[in-house]
Figure 1: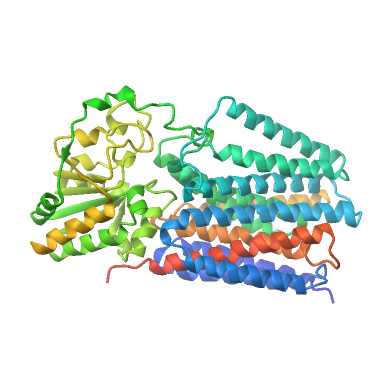
Figure 2: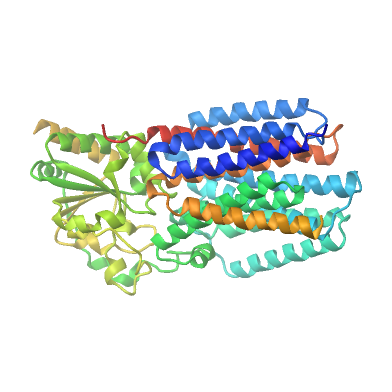
Length: 463
Length: 95
């Protein structure tokens, strides 16, 4: 008997489990079980596929899976939480390339090896899958290099950049049409693949480090779309369903990120943000800041009753999350209320701060999203900003000339006292001065976040 | 592929897209990173395609491409799930 019916039923069960799993992932108490459920669904899909009569030899498959799983588990256990954005970018790239290769492989089998040939629909699916998958791959690799620091996190812009990208995209589409017209000519498949790989690099290099949350979410969506396209090539419904879900999920996250920066997706994708708006034009020289020392900061903390901590990418860079947790525990022991205000785009990926603070054992119900905490600053004694800049810049509300004008920001300036823990006066990612630093209630605590916070803790302990 | 099959596949695509939209739009920001890495692992479903392309006899081009895809997709799936699990086990409520 043919196993087709069994395989299809298994795919259906897998699809249901994936959906229930993702649903459970949306609520913190059930999230972990949801992840396990979706992993089970994946296992069912894999086992079912192995029953397919198209698969004639298993030894290479098992060896490949075994080696890749061993590497995968090792890497996943070993990776630092601060490196999570890079890790996700890397894995995402692999997923995209895998889809592109599956479609290339199917193309080869159908046109070169078996002579089955391909019709227009399959042709379109193959080209879409290769195009999107390959762009995702090199795009993710560039994102990975930027996050890892192998490549400068700055936007790389040159004249005619968008024009070149557009030309490449048109070229890829022309190659796709040529392939569909003449499926047996391998040159077009290779041309599509190469063009897409180059396009992926060029599309992501103009996007700066702080826009990475958007890029990662968008590339995540692309892998889903590539997988769905591969599903059309193989007439495989499991791929189409899961690919479509991941595709829309990524798009929604992308949209949330864009909204949190008050920028359109087009604006982010075109890149170059913060590079053209030099720092000179906002009268940055006029800002006079008040410095505060470690001892004085500790004294300030000693006399208050409420603190809101605002973490940013700088906290991740300085690996200060454990020191921050220690500080918050110390303050709580003194009956000082401590909350964390999380801006949606703080860090380098969606939810980056939440993961870091969770790693440091800070309960997630202490982390409060922007909309829910913004009114509380007015009744708070100290707002402690650690390595955040643009997300607390009042210019977003007051200065219509500012490139970040209109971006929702945390109302830290309403707190009685604002302490900014920052390495130097360097402008933030957007390349603009932060007028907050010159406000009368703002104090600057210069230095590495981790050592500054640790020093404050030590002072506090002695009091 | 007949027009009928194509239509059925398109139906599935569109409906699944809507499910994705419904599932994700209510997720709290706290869970955005694990959600991203979990959906990333799920996108590794292309592993199913990679299995199908790498099962042929001998070593033709399609099989080698398939095995490479299988390697990458397995990394994506396995690492993705393990990393997500690691993150989620850290999310704790106040005791």
